[in-house]
Length: 328
Length: 252
Image (cartoon, rainbow over all chains, first blue to last red; front, side, top):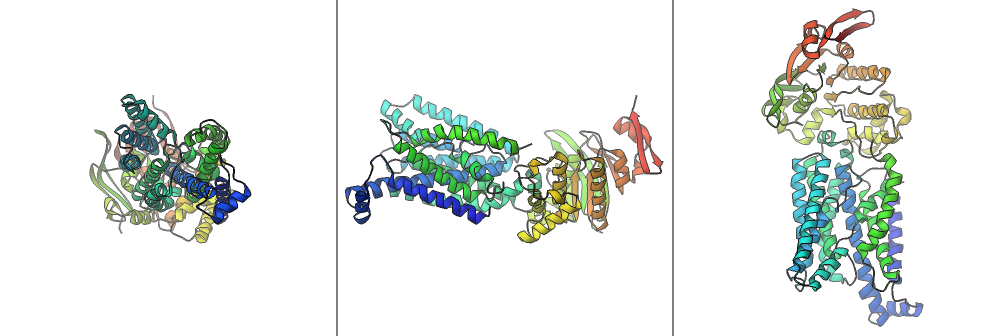
């Protein structure tokens, strides 16, 4: 399938999911109410549609797209179908930043939690970039990532341990579970600049990914500035992940699963898989958030819980089918 | 004439242990040089040092007369192409895409034409559209060889290019490298098969315990004394109607 056709098809599916996310929800709106919402945005149904659902759906799409793109770049960079921002510790770093900010009582300051998450993701990414420049073997970077991830998790547990009150504990925990509920346009807007820079860096790194297919030494003699491309890939993925965590908390599996969904259609080329992975990630998360809203439960399901519940078995299925062609 | 590749008193250390000591090598355009030596002798390290992939503790590595540490990535790629021994391929790209990675700077249609021509040279044209991870190890090695040939670089370096190939493919591979030398490229290979090394090489380099211990025409170099000292073999190069053959058994 050509790149353009694949991307158009995925964009069309995403549009359908966005529309579904807008029109379906906990509160069912009748046709008349929908008409009212479109004619009078300030009416009750209009409020539901434009101030509650639309930003929520947009946040899910933006976060999913960022995570899908970050996962695709990291998998290509490390030539490893298991790589994603979670494995490399970027998510854990961002989660730790947010947890610290909440525990220190900064939650009341607007943007403090988001800023802390983004800064911590960037710090993790910077560390990974330094390590990526120093050690060329992808396995080494994954090992460091696993160590960083475990360490970030341990420090987050420490924050739990010293949490001043059960309220703080609940707040941190709720953040770590991930959600796009109650986000407004300002929350989304603030993440667009770091996400845009991250996406730009990933697009720049894309041309180096296919060369890395043949290993570090062949890539080093391919004529491309590999050390710069590698640093751009890690930095771009960190920015994307950091802003995704800042907007929605920790949402797993999207970065891992999205590239697998599109890999075959993109001709196994890790560079060509970037845009399709972003579109697929956005679609996945919009669908997951819709599921979180319409599955009838007393307490609304958290987005991170839904992606893990559906994502883990789905991923196992993909892994089962793809294992044959991974690596020999 | 400027040497395509040269090492001057190069030293490479892993930790404090020298894995390449005082290596001085020069390869001219049009020359096919084969490096032989026992496992762990330092053959791969020598290639990596020459290409700027291993850091030198002392000495200089030059490609086309330029210090390799001063070359930009693009300039280095224009002077040399490398096929490492490691044949792991990350993703299941079709063979023509793999071969096309040798000509990244060409427009896609032209790159594809070059890739298919090179796949035909290695005898893989019928599998051009097949994913390299759906191939046998030998077929995949041919696709990687096609990528190396596609670069058309003035220096081709291949580490163990014939490992895992059937006898016909081994001879074909060495013939293709000879064709490249005839077109004027400098070719550097490492081989374990001494008979094939003797037949293929213009000049043979013997590496032992991190040092270049002998260099010269194959029949001059592979003396019974050297075979015993370096390879622990009792044997000699014998001339037969089919060409020279290294006859040997383990030294007692």
